[in-house]
Length: 477
Ligand SMILES: Nc1ncnc2c1ncn2[C@@H]1O[C@H](COP(=O)(O)OP(=O)(O)OP(=O)(O)O)[C@@H](O)[C@H]1O
Ligand SMILES: [Mg+2]
Image (cartoon, rainbow, N blue to C red; front, side, top):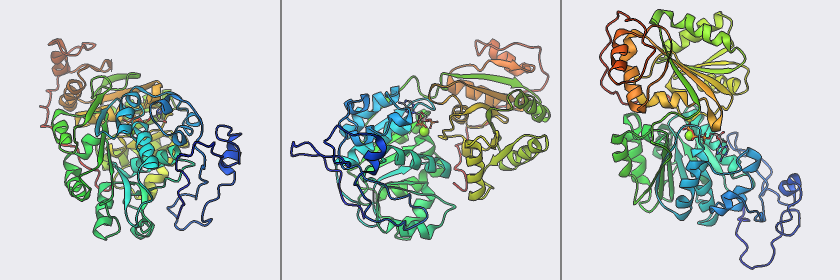
């Protein structure tokens, strides 16, 4: 469908860019993008397919911190307009090894640019190695745990690859499988998928992974957890042995790391700070409160910052739905996202929230990982997560890319066990910002544990921490 116009110039002669100017004299951006480069077709074949893009014929003659790390100039040129001028620490550590072709496990806090850390070097390799994909194949596969995250990664890959011949396609549940099957007929450079839908497509013979040379697991520890591991094993078996595998997350429990090793060959392991820590600029607090008083307390917090975006995490779909209805009744602009919503409702909830039309998003863990909405200023853990790592991911929806953010956890007497597990996983205490510290929590904090505000004993006995339950795949993801 697209001709290969992106080969590096090996003749030594100055290449001409799309506007007929010599290489390096790009002229203003619109001319560069629009120039003579015409798409080979000018109609869109399917609804899911992005607009045909103009292809950048010349390699921009630029020198940036990213090109110096080996990122192809055709990709690097897209970064400054996105506000990406210099590499973040994880990008600095991960990119050179990936450009070289190494397998890699990359761990860094939430909101620190892991998507670009795998996306930019992967695109660089795709641009310089290999050729057009065969029908039904993909050259690179990125797996993510939720539809929303897959969609976001696809948008990022599109932005990094703008102006190149690289094409991405996203396959997730809740969208037409026939449309996806038809699109895959032509093959694609980068396939971004949730595991369930990918398996469905493979079973229909619509996707063939035998030529996939790059595998990325975003949110790798969740992808290796019980909810996804069976699908993942099936998918891994279909991939060539000779491939580059990249695993990224903000958390990686020890057990998962051992499992991760079985997917990697002689990997580089790069970690920014001890893995599992919360992003540095999140002001965290825990407020002790009885379960029945949580809604009123939440309304008090929300009322103080009516114009700022906030995500409220509940544990169950039903509870989150009920809470969102209550907040709506109380006059808040609120939307809910969880597994009982249709795909259309999920997309509308998220796009209204991204646009700032709704200020409060009530969500289950389906929104805990990866979502990048820079304006989110507050995260409320209305219910504490029962998988401690998810706390780090939930609060990581705020304080993105060096911004500030606030995260308040509401802890009911029955949730002391969860609180303790979270603090243990992060190896750091969460400061108490309100309520009475229940007796059990005060005792824990006295015992060299996290320092609390030490209120008088609350009388409720603390529940024993439940055995660690593996995180579950969102049912409909
Ligand atoms: N080098 C950079 N300079 C400035 N901003 C950046 C840079 N790299 C990425 N960003 C921006 O930082 C934000 C967070 O990036 P990203 O979503 O990749 O984080 P993440 O590490 O994957 O977080 P999470 O663990 O929550 O998935 C994005 O808005 C992205 O555009
Ligand atoms: Mg991410």
